[in-house]
Image (cartoon, rainbow, N blue to C red):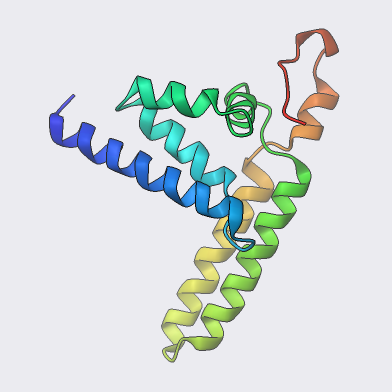
Length: 139
């Protein structure tokens, strides 16, 4: 891999980790998506930092469960959707250019569609799986 790409991925992983930790304390910023992105970037740039992230007691199990194909909990999906809707409404309300409003609404709608339709819901996946074939899940 090119050194510049490794540095870019490492920097992206560190940025996402920082945003994830901010998301733990700020009620409007979701933490889980940033930690998932950080794990992705660290897997491609720093195995040591990836392992550190996976070893964090409150974060690692969620990343492992997502990687195992379990998706995210239904409650997290609905919180993420609600935050996107509020963000879209506030952004569209504040933007003076109508084309920018439409763009924000369209991009937000794509994000909502992706979360609701393409990201697996943990409860649905677990209901379809063999109970003897499940990884340890976070509480």
